[in-house]
Length: 616
Image: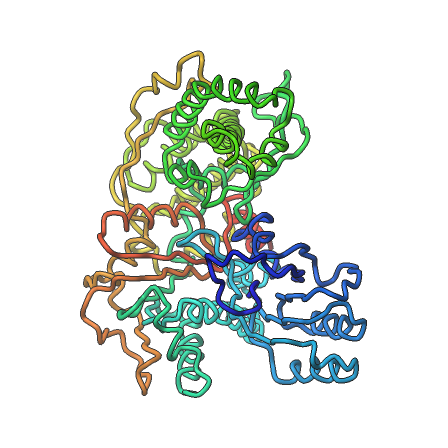
């Protein structure tokens, strides 16, 4: 698309054609996790601007538009044509544009006599946001439209529900057009996931039937990573497991998402000046904000985002030590080049001419980049560590794991809630997990006692109100989702990280070692992907959009295990589940899983939604 919709030739030496990129907020969210400003520049994008900002005419430059086909976007594009802002226009729509809107643009182009300048019009079918090679989320701009709360509101009307489902299906359809594969769909019955499955099946079916305009024929199919075997799409409803999104976590990426402001692969940190004589558990004083991108290019992140936190701290420390050894080398190089006082920017400008300088120097930009990543992770990990210590997150994590795996507890739940330490939110999360995963709901008298303790701890009881209704409503009460047997064993503190030279004072933080346990979503996927018979998934519906007559059955035609699967959680997902799936598939040779969700929320955001649902 950025190359005017012709394949990009890798080794062509010519300069790229310079152009402007015009996007709306949707387009911005899709592009920003994928391409950095530098990468855009390498593709010839000199300027990238929001559609609805004040833009000056640049009459001799082509413009690539990447927007949703909404009423106001189309109006603004027509206005651009009338004002003759650019030399030529390449219009790309994130989702398919309707015939009537296309006619509006054509009329505007005629009126502005700019028909020859509209070079191409494309439907890109890209209405989803890719956060990782194996993870996507539907949208960010209007995510409250498809949120857990929106789907589970007791007062939702049928037409509102239709709109929500259509929004989800439109994005999933785009996703499969991009993959170039028609999936076999499985879903649980009687849930929102089933409504999505029915609609998606119908939409794929209609597209396949119209052979002339089908998006799944011919050349696109070969390009998909799924050559001969079709992928399995498992549609899961968030309601099958409400405990996991509330769970405290112990792996790096999920912790960053849980305790920091981490959004579309960018983390925003407030640099604190340390906690000066503030009461226990108080937030450190606010200082300036910094933001960091945690991207696939970042090797450290790729390697450690799924590691338990103490391991991450140790690795950052090791990286730092190996860098310090090389740092003296850097100083030497700088002095040879007469660059002592220069900042890193000036040096990276020089890096283009490194070929002319000695080979020793060529390692300089690489070293500086390494240094940048070490600093980044030192700051991020330190920020996470502050939260772990201030809020005793390791204790909560271990305790919840015990509750979820039905192990005996060494300290009563009531004691933890009544403990003066700890934030109201952490206590609420702990109690909700207990309430959701316990087989025997606490008696009214006990519940009142818990409620009083929670209220005294400063908790808002609305989420509990909702979970109580939810539990009464789901017949799951008879068999709550099981979370496997015990999963953590504390192993004395790490001695290496304890060194005084370390950046991270891990004192008092438990070094918990994780055992791989499949969460409910992973277990469901395992059953369906490996074709295992299991009461949990045996009555999942089966859809094959390629079959001429759709018939409703749960008997799969295909008896072979699948090589590729997409798990999609209707009602919101989280990094804990994503990480669990990634760990699961590591042990399976040659198989791939993608994880998607209608929105990505951390426990704080989820509790807020539950609270709104529980309000009287």
